[in-house]
Length: 363
Image (cartoon, rainbow, N blue to C red):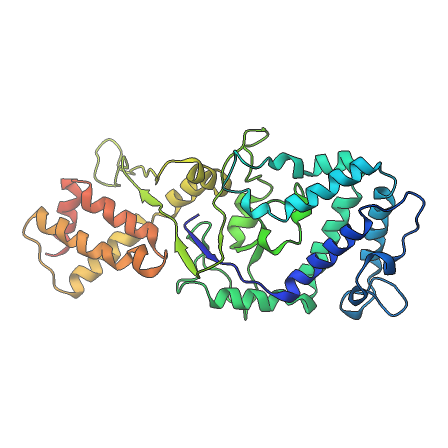
């Protein structure tokens, strides 16, 4: 990803997760013959006056049913399996540390298939799906307020850090997608952990990432690294990523390929950028996003507006060097970073046909 953004903590958003952890601690040593009585396993603030599960003071039959189903499966387990599951819950609290370290953390233990092996059914996954549905749809947990604060603290361009192509939604219209970095379908323990839920644009979340596992290469147990998007002590931190168009053929400059061919190189070419490209189809999307004729015409308008006149190709090259700074991502916080790379490539391509085309713009 292109940059990291500030982690916004919201007490209401984390409250449901805290109630879940409270419940897990309470049932850790539950006996096999014990009945499900919410008042024994939940904090009083999560219950109605008559002992039913009632987050925010409203009885929720669906959530109570899901908790009960999981409880009834869990209580039947041998104590060794209960302890194994409890250990996974503790591990999952530090999930944010797993993304960028493959040698220290074994993430496969947190997968749903391992949890299902322990519990014996899908009742835990179904419980967490229900909790996320409730958290994301009931604004008593202040998810809209959380997004509003998050959006306010974004750098000025408000670009999605996962692609740098789309703006994140304006809060007054609607909130952006909240992407589960570790998929809730594969890592249900982190379904309602705020440190695992990151705002992203619709295209990144719904069209390209979908059900891709950021921890493992497709359909394999080969671990990979993923840039964790949150920082906890600042509002913005640009990742050291450069988009390079070397090897591209510029349209209308090559007799053998008049349509041209764009190539995208992501530097550095390391495990993080490879995962970024695999998960979000970055190279493909960037190639499709290069608007050569439009951007060259924009350049022409500026040249004419300022009555610039070129007498040789070196002057064209020097002008491109200055012009690209208008789109420097270091100055404007990512927005137009692809356009910056495009003009930088034109500057350094040493393509005399292109330079002559630009020179003629000033006539």
